[in-house]
Length: 276
Image (tube, rainbow, N blue to C red; front, side, top):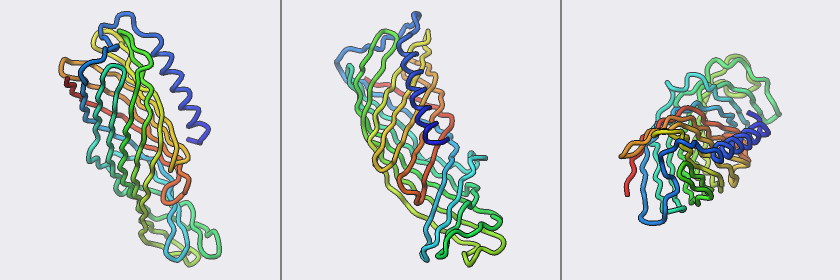
C-alpha cells in the first residue's frame, strides 16, 4: 500500500469509528460509563496470525548493497509466535494500557530486487531461491482518558510510546553472472525504533453480551510514519471476554536499511480476564 493510501485508510477508519461510536445501540445492557473508584484490571492473551509484507536493503562489507521483497504468501508455516499480551488498568475515565508482541518469521520466501556494486547498479540475475528471516519485538505503553462515556459506549483518547526492535536476515542464492557480486551469501542487521503515538479506542454495545471493539493509533519518531488499527467483535462473560478481530501494523522508515516499508496484517483472537 502506498503512503497516501495508508494515510487515507487511517482517516477513513477514524471516521467510521467515530460514526459508530456516536450511534450506540439502544438495546445495550452494559454500562460503560464507570464512576471513579477502585482500579479495574484486564489481562489479555492474544493469538495474532499476521502475514508480513516488507522491503529490505542490506549493505555488505565491501560497500555493495542488495535489496529484496518478502513474499507474504504461505505465512502461517513460517510464523513462530513467542508471546502476545495486553494489560489494562482503568479508574473512572482514566486508563493505562500496555501491549507486547514478539514475532518471528523464519525462512520467508523473498525475491532479490536490486543489487548495487562499486560501479553502480547491477542487473539482477535469476533468483534461484532467497529467504528472509524477520524477528520483531513491539511494545506500546499508553495513557488514556474517556472523552465520551454512556451506558452503551465508551471512547478513549490515548497517547504514549511504541518501541520496536527489528532484526532482519537475508540469505540469497542467484544463478548466472552478477557482475562480480557474490551469487550466494547471508547478511543481517538490527534496528531499534522509538515512536510517539496518539489515537482512539473504545467499545460500542451491539445488544446482549455482544459489543464492537476498535483501536486506532498513528505516530512518528524513529519512523517516518507508523500506524496500527484493530477492529473486532467481543462477547462478555462474568469473568472476562473473548474477542475475534483483525489487526494491522505498518511502518514507513526513514532509512531503507535493513527495512524500509513493512506491514503486519492478519486475524487476532483474544482471551481476557477482568479483576477488581
